[in-house]
Amino acid sequence: LCDFTVLGFESSCDETGVALVRADAAGQVPRLLSHALHSQVAMHQAYGGVVPELASRDHIRRVLPLTDAVLAESGRSLDAVDVIAYTRGPGLAGALLVGAGVACSMGAALGIPVLGVHHLEGHLLSPFLSADPPEFPFVALLVSGGHTQLMRVDGVGRYAMLGETIDDAAGEAFDKSAKLMGLGYPGGPALSKLAEQGDPKAFALPRPLLRSGNLDFSFAGLKTAVLTQARKLGDELEARKADLAASTEAAIVDVLLKKSLAALELTGLDRLVVAGGVGANRLLRVQLNAECRRRGVRVHYPELHLCTDNGAMIAMAAAMRMASGAAEPSKRYAFDVRPR
Ligand code: KG4
Ligand code: ZN
Figure: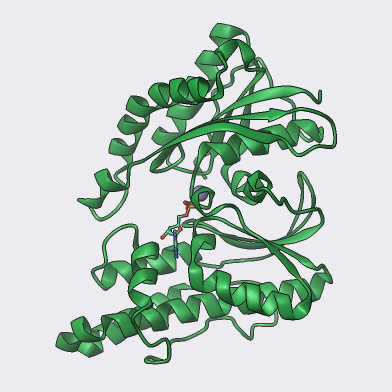
């Protein structure tokens, strides 16, 4: 199979994403035909975080209108769809069930096979949606709200874990620190924006596991240190918030940078792919770009708007898995989600 069109659904958390990806020929990177996204951020903001029940209900409201929009934009009808892909997990169970339910019922009604995709594989392969896609093999730094991993990637489905977080994820470290500074949700972008006006050297925050000798991460201690610092500041916190934000961001980015460089050294590879929501962080990009240029390492990112959750990465991962023979879609319509 080397000539097919995938309709993909993402609904694992607080973004409803739908996309059409087309594989034209063997050996060619599949291309994005169209995609549509609805972010629930504004809806969850009032609660300071994602409310799972509200997320599921909103996915239900949005998914079919988004599908119509994607088909209209591509100038195609459902007749042109050969495979339907959906995020199988990890994510919120009720939210995942919306995408899986729509994919499987649409597939069953129209006789189109379906394929469940791992959300992280979607992030991992999202740089292939950009104009200058990476080539295998490469080291991947996967940094999202739920995961922090370094992997050696030799091809589609050929992933070796080099290191991962033993507690909080990098995105969680951003979000939790932002929350206790009163910056709201989602905290990563807000903290990063405030940090631009602060002094990254104002507070000495820990760089957990930086010298652990392996490629694992730990961010729980950093969050505690930020909390301790915020309490110590007391009434002064408001005036020093930008400094604390800048110091927090510097600590997180420093660890991600040093461990990524160590992974490149260990594997001897000269290509790095950064994916997941934290990959949108400007300081991380600036520092990685500078250090990698010095070492002759090429860095690939997804386009900024495809760093956080979207349907394009799910349709793309399905297309690449099928094109490489790593997975085959099925007409069993199993409707299986894997929240964890
Ligand atoms: O990949 P993603 O959309 O969702 C998960 O699969 O988790 O990542 C969301 C995470 C959140 O923790 C968010 O705060 C973080 O990515 N994030 C950022 C930035 N943009 C998003 N963190 C730091 N700086 C940013 N610019
Ligand atoms: Zn994600």
